[in-house]
Amino acid sequence: MPTEFEPIIGLEIHAQLLTRTKIFCGCSTKFGAPPNTHGCPVCLGLPGALPVLNRSAVELGIRAAIALDCHIELESVFARKNYFYPDLPKGYQISQYELPLATGGHLSLPESGTDVGITRIHLEEDAGKSLHEGFPDSDLKSHVDFNRSGVPLIEVVTEPDMRSPTDAKVFFATLREILVSLAVNDGNMEEGSLRCDANVSVRPVGQSALGIKSEVKNLNSFRFLERAIEYEINRQIDVLKNGEQITQETRLWDASADRTLMMRSKEEAHDYRYFPEPDLPLLRITEDWVNEVRRSLPELPSARRVRLMADYGLTSKQVEQLTRVRPSLATYFEEVVEAGAPPKVAINWSLGELTRKLNEEQTDQVKVIRQRMPPVALAKLIRLVDRGTISGTIAKEVFEKMYITGESAEVIVEQDGLAQIDSVEMLAGTVNEVLKQHHDAVAQYQSGKSGAIGFLVGQVMKATRGKANPKLVNELLRKAIDR
Ligand code: ADP
Ligand code: ZN
Ligand code: MG
Image 1 (cartoon, helix red, strand yellow):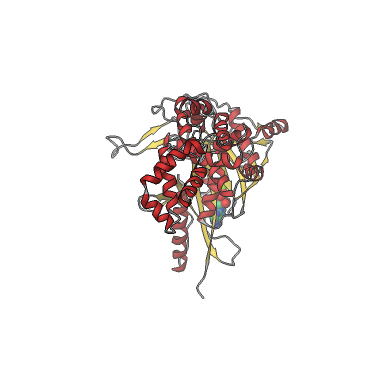
Image 2 (cartoon, rainbow, N blue to C red):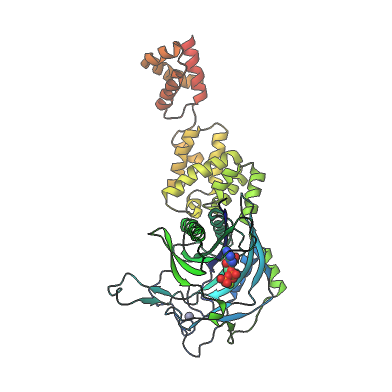
């Protein structure tokens, strides 16, 4: 019987902390500045410069650790990780090694419910960025930009608890959502503020010992993460089926070739000659501080999803659409309901017109919409429909006008004479006119094609510029024809 293999995956995620300044100096962390304009003796590694720890970086690390159910270590230690690379000016990275900020957390994945253990979260500084392309002399030289050197990061290390590329993708997406919702990280993978390395091994089904793993670097999108893991699993299974051994190595994802490439054989911890950072004291965190951070945490995305379903009777799909891409849309929705709109209607507007507007404005920033269309104003518009003052179709028109002019729904309806026409007297003339002009449709209806009535209703709606009450129009048409 051919051997079946089972994949095992553990992730290491680097997330840039949303501080204003770097982790050990006062230089700006702002992305996109001209190369080498955010530097000082500390982050450029000049001799004699001393690091001073940024308190906000620690606080953001604590936030993440609490959200991931970790044990916060009240004493942790910074360590030097020594290696040589041109983008590492000190010749070592300040990180945490034996005693990290937090340990032993977990995150359960939506849908599958897989519980992924969090081994540790530690604080560290980022390196600079080597630029190998895009210069006239790129074939001869590499360039380096130190703006990123010393930017604060947390590294989140998971247990090898994931069993499929999808598990890994869902974990990364869920972690990203949490970090973004806590304002710990901006979630921007393209700019490199959130990066993921995947450790992958396979083992024969039924074997309890883990197989030898490879580590794939450079995975800066959900798709690449999934594809790279898929590729690694198949590559390793092929190697084993050929009777060969997996070698522990670091590999690189090559997106253009859709495959992973060997980068180097795996370095061991002792290669880095870790030792405690002599220029920084023990990092001490008080229980009080942890409790204070805990109290200040906003509702986590998973808890919020459960509450939105329970409080407003939304389906899981609606909640998904409301929270996944733009969590602030859910806040907006809740405020519309708070201002008096029925949830069932408010959700349709949120996922319909508002989402359309956001796409039109090409933004995920609900605040852009909020300025022109405060939740209270939309709630008033919804109430006009609810009361039958205007039709649903007209409401969309009013919405557009409100958005452009900033006027209230009532004022626009009044000024433009958009109130629904639902008196028999006011509609009778138009109904007769339409019947006269469309003998064909009338005949069709009479010969049993009941669908023809829809066409006639449409004609009346058109003639009244959408203001007629369609239900009443339908009634009047049937009565007139049947007479
Ligand atoms: P290293 O010695 O390479 O630093 P660690 O044991 O510290 O390895 O684990 C690093 C990451 O690799 C963690 O996310 C862990 O879950 C994952 N990992 C460890 N062993 C395996 C394995 N055999 N297969 C898949 N992932 C693994
Ligand atoms: Zn600096
Ligand atoms: Mg390790």
